[in-house]
Length: 324
View 1 (cartoon, rainbow, N blue to C red):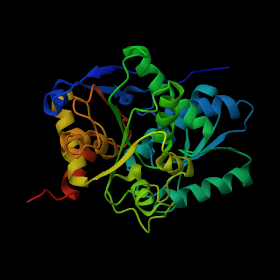
View 2 (view 1 turned 90 degrees about the vertical axis):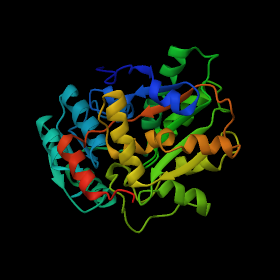
View 3 (view 1 turned 180 degrees about the horizontal axis):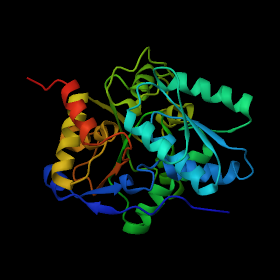
């Protein structure tokens, strides 16, 4: 059986973030994965379990899940069809094609692309690879936490873990990984942008909701409905999950600051997690008593991103108005 397809990514201290926060901040650099994001952990694991005898795979994705699926399919010698919404940047489409995938552009948002992927599963006999809503994905993503424990030692648990949330797959993996280590008391701070905030909306409503539209430029956070398991974790009393929002402006500022300080370019969806430090969210949560002070060390999962380059960054800088 081939794989695993992911790598053990670096866990590095951010001096700049640590200085801002007054406590040690570690970055789990999922941007270093072969496909550019954490998605390859779960998708690689799922394909190992489900697609070994497949005629091919189909995945619906605004970018990162599709990149992971295409990378894994190439390594497994399987044909891949990736269905992307029209909001996906051309650079993502080109990268997918470079990996040998067939790319089909359908709909304006992920939900519409996913409907087409499910149709192709029935009509073409392909193995469906969900981008975020499957137990095997969460099991694969949970390895990000076991790697942190291996690096720091199981007795040195973090004070909190910060993650971006789109459909909720990474959140489910992080929660599962923490529980597997007996670290249920470690809070998870979930970050979304206003306008791509299906998890925050569900937490506030006390029930799963479907957004009318994705209005944020962080398109890779752009699921209209969070997966049920992520919502169930938010309702559990066993683990503290703190749902926070930032604006596109704050996420973009975080991307720019991260590029200047850490010399790594990530997409806007990842900027939402970085903004937890750069825009003072963690500090505010400490002031409010929702996170302890001192905190111990903080882990920010740098989820990565395939849909960013200098041209795309310049486009975001034009699209997103600066605060006056």
